[in-house]
Length: 420
Ligand SMILES: [Zn+2]
Image 1 (cartoon, helix red, strand yellow):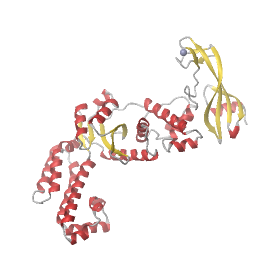
Image 2 (cartoon, helix red, strand yellow):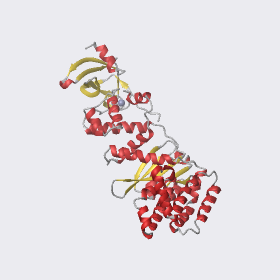
Image 3 (cartoon, helix red, strand yellow):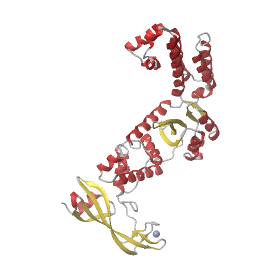
Image 4 (cartoon, helix red, strand yellow):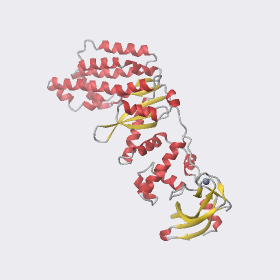
């Protein structure tokens, strides 16, 4: 063992020095620490300094390990006479009040919890599950409180399904940065209204230009009510899902009506038929071609679905409307009632589809946020604590760690702040 000065250097706490080293049981290192310059102490109530010490008590904190040895800091914690607060304990620089872990140790556990289940992080750092969860909660809350408040230009309001039942949740996200803003039970008007009014302040709401939602009446109503200046843009993937559903209806009709030839070709083709032509390759393409040769109506419906992609290629709203009218017109003598219904449906929602001309919302971000949410839920093996889940989702989608400097900022023993 080197000198105590070396130990102080290794410990690396700015205002504290090591005054004694002991070997505890099971390889634990007990470090006596003392303040450098023992003149005045900081009151934990008001933060002012005083030299009036009433008494002192030994307290311990677990700290980050030295090589294989877990470390415990032992320090004589003073109780002070403060002029403003009365009797108070002193504030220590390396830990929060009442905490049993030093701040940097807590940060390390909290950080690990973002890439592994809490139970794994607890085992890895030899703390209880409860301690790891508390560390994680403090870590995430502190991060969320100190990060800058962005003003999102494009919002996304989407529903996700959790669990096996029909339990839906509404997710509000910032589509420009690709971050989750909040999560609320249900997919009603109330849930989105709560999200928009409590998760965003008036300045943030005023900055919103467009909200990307699916064609779900309650969402559209609330956007018009809470954000009168923002426009609703319908999510491309949801529009195309409706088109695929119509195509599937055509397939089902044809399959049941047609004779043996069609049944032989059409069996087990559902997923193939729902795929986009551009993603179908080789022998699968030939399978589709045989199917289309056997049934012209199915072919027509497939082509019509493929054409809908062009709705998002126009620069003007006029162009979108003209294209849709042309598309509906082409249906006229086809005897495809499923596609006609789809045409009417699209026509009723054309305003929100054409709004994409003015607000180039990033549709892909909506999907990628959903994927991240599912990944976080799976890693947490389901999560009952909702506030915690929202914090975890915010962290996972905001990606605050992008360089070694970011990590160092989070693991610093004294201050915790984030620039993201
Ligand atoms: Zn005080």
